[in-house]
Length: 339
Image 1 (tube, rainbow, N blue to C red):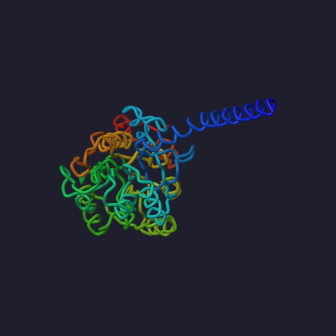
Image 2 (cartoon, rainbow, N blue to C red):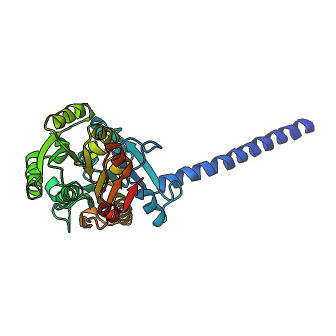
């Protein structure tokens, strides 16, 4: 009986040891899960495809901004990324996913993602980039937007005219310019055309507006440009255009069109030149706004910021493919020359 008692005691101690071991194994996992649950969580909604070697992130300043403010993904912040792969119909369900995850703030990259997130939530703070916040209806004023959205503008009214001026100064022989726009993104195409005509007329330029809602309409748009004997292509860099930038640049080069747009990512995709806001700087500043919101600031009280850094980029590879020479005066003014 004494033997059986010792055996029972040994078995009991073994069971206790097993329970203690299991508890120690589970404890770190539970602590990690609890810590993750309490970390601030941000959502990112992009119209583009996920960044890759062939599709670099046009807003890579985002990661730099995180580092500068001391954020390390997985350590003191959780990031939920969603990419629509250039398909507008995916934006709404992806925005709904981020809302269901109860993220603390959403970074909406451009007009399409912003519209989707605004439809999905009126309470979760949103930080975005936009052309005209007041006209687009999400800000009462730049100084005090109100509501649950704040962010940065990416353009000024003077910028389209400045791009046309750069084009004409560099290539005086250019007269006919095709302007490629996404009517869904720009809203009032007629107003945009009138503004472009007003900028083009003093420069002796003729403007023809072409519409493209998605990639399936690209061939038809370029056929119209050829029909009207366009010499240059001005692309309004909205989400759709940025997503399909490489193909648009290739078609422009094929048709010997001098291509110009807004953002550096367009020049790196093969556009002849770009002039516009520095997206990396805007991305870093968006993170600063996000940080303020995570520290209890209300988005409606945070002023919409305007770009302060602009870049002129020239692509010499594209110039060579077009068989043209870029004037030295333009190269000297450029912030970056792609060789």
